[in-house]
Image (cartoon, rainbow, N blue to C red; front, side, top):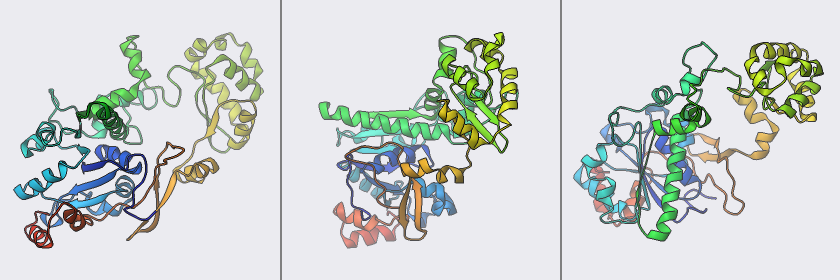
Amino acid sequence: MSAGVRKGPLARFRVLDLTRLRSGPTAVRQLGDWGAEIIKIETPEGLGVSDGWGDSRLGPDFQNLHRNKKSLTLNLKDPEGLAIFKKMADTADVIIENFRPDVKFRLGIDYESLKLTNPGLVYASVSGFGQDGPYAKRPGYDQIVQGMGGLMAVTGLPGQGPVRAGIAVADSATGLYCALGILTALLEREESGQGQWVQTSLLESMIGMLDFQAARWLIGKEVPEQAGNDHPTSIPTGVFETSDGYINIAGAGAQQMWERLCKAMHAEHLLERPEYKTGKLRSANRVPLNAELSQITRLCSTQEWIRRFEEASVASGPIYRMDEVFDDPQTKHLGIAVPVHHPELGDIKVVGQPVGLSRTPSEIRSATPARGSDTEALMREFGYSSEQIAEFQKRLVI
């Protein structure tokens, strides 16, 4: 499929993208991959403001986040630039922004203002801590929210001190929750004919991702602690050393899985030990149990254990570095590394969608655009003449 040709279940929707950094662009990516027309609004290059992470615009992260978009440069601080944006907003189905909460009101492009001329608009706002409240004006960053949301307190080895997760969990989760909210609002619009304001924040998303760990406190008044590579409640589940590396074993807290595990390891004697008789006892005695299991797993290679555990229907798997992840035959079969051609970088691969639809699949149609690459074409589409476009460019309105 050539760049710019859209299809897919969201192809009828136009999205204006005012987002920066990661959380907002993650939401936009979800819509773009399913066919929505994405117009990324960026600052004119001549103003010296980098919306593309400086010199890393051609880097892997930016390229992976901003595919399937058109790029238009527009100075929202200029009255004429603002007028152009409002004209575009009247044609949009969705606007997504992650400014500081007060910025959109100062510019006059908040939901209440824009819905006056576009009542069907779905307007999505992403923030660090919410649109209002005592922390609303604080800058929100993933690691800050991992700490405030409770993730760092349950990540890492017991007694190690707070540990951040190896990915931007709060940012990515917020983008996904935001996309879900947008799609829900678009579905509701089909009945009411009205848009609405979708709001999410890094803090809310981080707490939402804690899920069962959060529920342990809310319902049981239990404060979860760091459990390292062990599962907080289901033992044995964790990382075990083999003769040539490490292996993950999971789900063996359940009695039937525990029995299958012991038999696959030729360790039936552990089934008779009173301190390991029940799941609750195995969890309470996790340290000596893990030590005994590790003595056995060190006797064979990772692949040998995986073969034996697979035959016994015991959940296990290798622990890969990133190159090994994408070299795995199942990963290759799933096709989640998707090729795309970039005019400067050549043929590259990006991370595709982890969900499939049988009739209308997602599609990586085009690589991340250069800043402003679609400005002239889009301005003409919105009715501006060549003379007007040239004058706007001269004055850095676009």
